[in-house]
Length: 386
Ligand SMILES: *Cc1c(COP(=O)(O)O)cnc(C)c1O
Image (cartoon, rainbow, N blue to C red; front, side, top):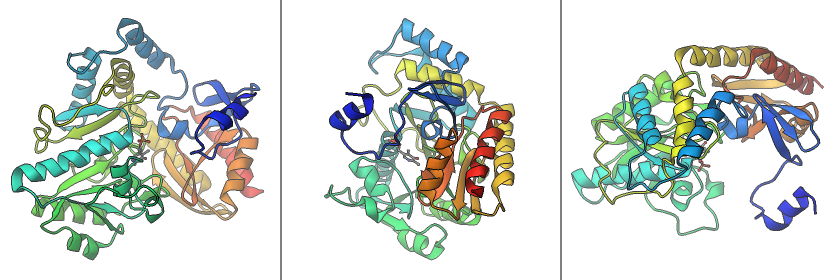
């Protein structure tokens, strides 16, 4: 049996796989089992922050791997403490809880928001407002939080206490932000929903409304975080600090790690025994993340912005391109032609791209060299022009 047959036979059929087996790579290239190279403009969905096998990152991870691969959260470890310090110092936030994925990071934020409210007001303020077309994860509660009816099937009963508001609809937001509401949760750029950038005035309105009513703002930075948009976290583009933000995907540069980051106001909500995770903050993953955080400096973020602007300028206005959305190296491209066919044609030309809702989605490694990015975009332009 070859790899694909084995996979089809033994692995649950939850993914519509692309007929491609990847076995290696370097930098912004991945290699298939026949040795063909592809320019990777997806980074494994915004995970491989510095591409494949970045030498400094590999060194940081393997050094920790051969020192101590795991210990329980009953003990202190250096990489976890250092990573939390970096996350707080670079954001002005106060405390971190580590888990292993985006869904878990959001689950923790949801628990903390409800407990914050319970501690202050007692029972009754359980509602969390999320946005339509959002995506917050695949657990029963984070699916509930996700504002897409198509995902609210099969698995009932779903967790109660979520209300969905269309981004931009101030009246609906104000109406839902009542005495029973403890938090508003949003992605500042909706990733899976199609790379939809939230309107700055709407976000400001939501933040002001929330502050007036002691409702927490939870920013889901699972996809937008860790330099992806040209700032360390997307909320930094919007001029406010969330009460809690979550991140995962690119945080550890290719290893599973989630973080829920608390402000001064929420830092003491989680108390001993109220939450936990066996693997959360694992020292190998944390060492990878320390490397990532230490290398996301202003010069790199400036480069992310410039590369993003280059992509936008190259594609916007082309015949066949209906719109270009996003910020930094999180880019959505609306196409006149069939999206699935375009993605497949890109693969034939040796460039891997993603989709989000009805757009092509580009999430290249943040350190992709300019010439490689240019080559990838030229190939996409050929596909669009065909
Ligand atoms: C990917 C994603 C998640 C879920 O992350 P997992 O690591 O797959 O659990 C949650 N929120 C957003 C915004 C995401 O992009």
